[in-house]
Length: 203
Image (tube, rainbow, N blue to C red; front, side, top):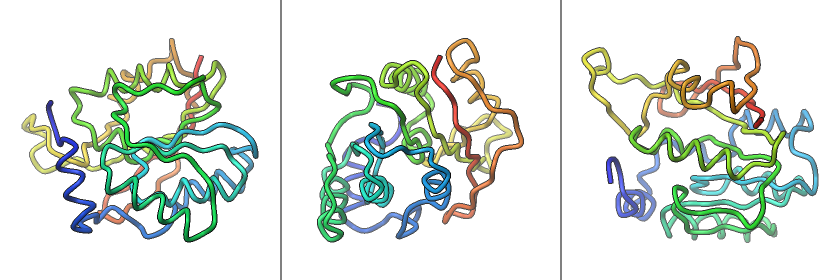
């Protein structure tokens, strides 16, 4: 496959080479939680859950949350984090391009999965996100803004892969998703880049 495979991510987590990890949940997830975006009892997926900081915060808020990750080491780390806080959530090792939930969910929290996938796989992943959600469900997305030096010459470099907002409009078209109006909140990232935070509604 194009881009990093499961072995790449397994090595990253086994060696602790995870410079994107804040050591805590994203401040944007906490803002959305405090604004009541995540309702207790609602069903939420967190693809590419990594160390599980966001999974734990959602579980603590009473959300029925399922974390997904490609790497077994990430799944283990997420489960350990949950156990340390005495929280319950499902965390599964899964390929997001193949996996499907038992039933459509209320929301997907997309922070680290899209920018970790090579753009060759973005169309398939976007179709998965649409299929995972109930009509009216929300895709709570943090689109990574991390254009590399070679981008003006056409090089595709990552991870993280730059999620240009124009590309995101094409990937999540208005025929399938309702977009909020800009400007979008900027969230500083540990890698020195930033993310654009927005909530898309599945049509």
